[in-house]
Image (cartoon, rainbow, N blue to C red; front, side, top):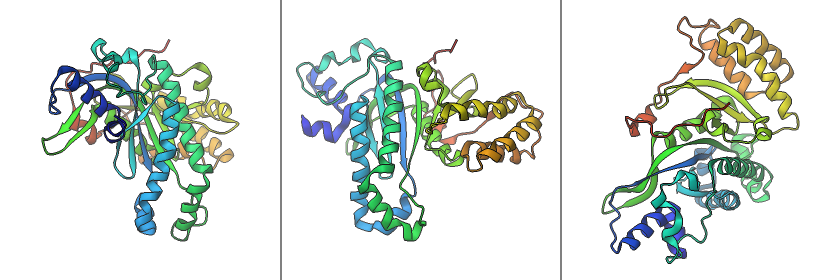
Length: 338
């Protein structure tokens, strides 16, 4: 069973357990709908790292994977998929499972001993954010990772450090075996999984290590929310309402930064871009290297600092990667914050 856990992960263990309980095995069967938190984690500058490290790039990735796995263990999450420079992380919670999918089926199979599951979505949200923050901090402080960074600095620059990027989102997905009779991968498929990938990609534009969706943010506690800063407001096809995306502030002055950033973000949403630009410039005078502020300034600049006549408080974006798994009905309804 240990080999099954390592080789297939929780999604694979779930599929195997359901098959064994039914008395037969068929990997190519209908999936199960679940609700979970999805985290897409990417190793920055991976192509350059591979070219420099060559065969040691496997050791490099596995060293990072060990750090990721250790924090997942204590945050009740797990790695579903590793594609070399990226990991798909999943945090399931009991209130997001159909009754037949709760882990009662594993009592006699001993397949799930290393997989913990949070009781509810709020607990899972706090645990997942804490886990990702822990990964970011440990990657920065790890002596083993720094040894690899030293080998990369001749190419990447003297200030280079190994960094990860994260996107956190919550929603429904289909858990199942994807592939053919020759090769099957146990994974999660949905627009919400892909949206976590989009968020991670946007961390590069906004110069932050982690971005989260508002659907995820509403499930954090009040103290944690004080360190979460709004960076943009967008509309994507799978939601009928626009969605705010936020970053997590790490510094001792996190709450101050979050509060001051509202001075330019509120005018941005309200369409007063002249005031937004002025307040952004004031903010950047104090924090010239601030990624989210510089990113929003680039967005305004792309419109010549003129509010579009069609502005409704958000940017409509076309994310082609999300359309690959488009389903007509959005079965997951995010909680509305009061």
